Image (cartoon, rainbow, N blue to C red; front, side, top):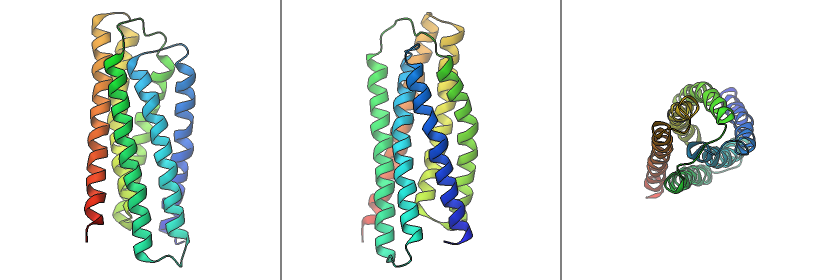
Length: 208
């Protein structure tokens, strides 16, 4: 594995490690807070972690095995990216359902989720730029889809921060309820859009 591929490998590994803490902290945070945006964000981060693990494994296998044919490598990359696209769609749909079914009740303590979302904006924007740079240098399909995923994650975390900040500053008000619901809905629709775009692109690559 050359230096550029090693750089992609390390970036994916760090992404997996840094993304693993989010679902754990948010899961614990759900014991004290139950904002629909917070629940949606927990669902999203758990699904994205699974997609990241698959992307990491596919990248490692396709770049470490020297005897793998180009067709086999492209087929594995396409399957990994399709899985990421499906995960984005499933995550978005589950969040949309939670948003619709959420009740207008006390949201509890959303500070843990807000802290995670704020850190997510910072970390995901860094990874977004990193994956974009690596994709331009290598042209690797896995890295290209990760660049899109992290671009979506950055935008989504901004929405989550705004929604949860409203719940924290204006607890129990109609304004916080609607901002919370609108925030989780925007998260859902954006993730679904990115997932559909990814699936459509990979299906086009499959055609002869």
